Length: 65
Image (cartoon, rainbow, N blue to C red; front, side, top):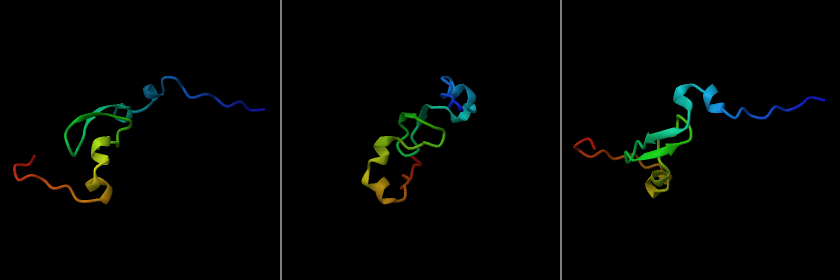
């Protein structure tokens, strides 16, 4: 009978440094938020907006902000 190994407690230690959960800045509102993985760059507040859910393009302010 084979045994199933449990996940390593320090799994984050085996991931590349860019792929660990950490605080990142949202690309839409620039607010720091706890990102669960390296590809998560939009905070949950922004994801809950109607514009995000509809797929509307981001409008950039003329000043670049």
